[in-house]
Image (cartoon, rainbow, N blue to C red; front, top):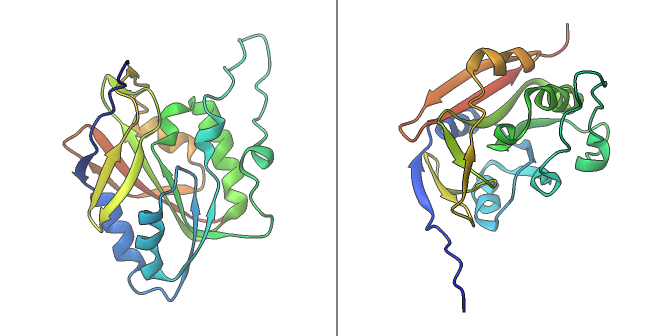
Length: 200
């Protein structure tokens, strides 16, 4: 019988999560959009902020179709079908986790343009960007251990080349979002809090 190796979850500090929680300390309630794999422990953690949560696990739609060649036009992904977000609803927090690492920048730009329809001024988008040569071949599940620690869990040990989206490139596609905080961690991850400024 072949045994499949599953790496043990590893706990890392998360200054981004800590900063996000500090922002939410004095709010009466908040609306949270979860774009990654969700676990019961995370829902229990967020319950202290009296949230309403909408779960739209984008992981199930990965990998996205390859980008077209130079002689064909870029086709916008069908985000309405992929995410199924209810029209007219806006969120205070959008949890993207490490999803942007698995998308080409052109697709990231398209996703951000779509998500702006569901943002209000001050909406915070929380993202983790890998800045190392390799990254996990599959999306990591992030379990919230406490307000300043995340438990990284990945079902597979395989690695793949990391796109290493640089700060200037990321900022360039995050139109109408400003970098509120960024934290470079010892494990090669950069945690970002992007704040939506609203439309002009």
